[in-house]
Image (tube, rainbow, N blue to C red):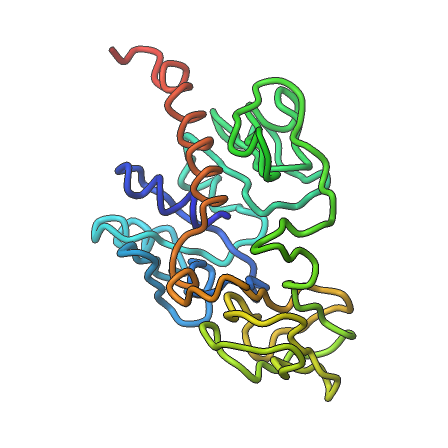
Length: 257
């Protein structure tokens, strides 16, 4: 979801910087700027992210119209660049250390944030009537733990890790898979497809995993191009974040006209 937000804000001529963990466990890697942590650069629908190692490098990347991504799990770089807006889009699904003091406008995405307490605004991330809605009071809906249905399938479309260990990817995103196909393994224990469809997401080979962790995502609709496109859900959430920023412009720039 975070990459959908980043993409939209960049398209709206906002200067965005991404902070990431050292080993992202992103599943939909083709549409996740987090993949630049491993590859150095990653492009999503015409927008490029470039890994940087200092604030100085970040400014150079901005000058070239790209998005800097910095390995900084605690987002300490904010103390140097002093952003006007901080968006926490890690989808923590529980309370976080984010605080309203971290920026003039702090936006939390999904559960774990309460508007007016640890964020100024919260954007709903749960599918349904309120998806993408900006909340200036209260909090987002609690995580149900149930994947949203796609093509009539919910939990069946999600690939789960059988045990703790290192994940080995045996297929690639965009591959067609059938029921029972071997998609990956953890220390020799198989991860198999439960439905027929396109492998829309898959953990990077060699990533440390825990039992029950999401390892992949199968799209039963069978449209391979969807693997390389930002989802409707991510775009709806991105719209909510953009709305919250534009709504707050007067407070961010009280002397602007």
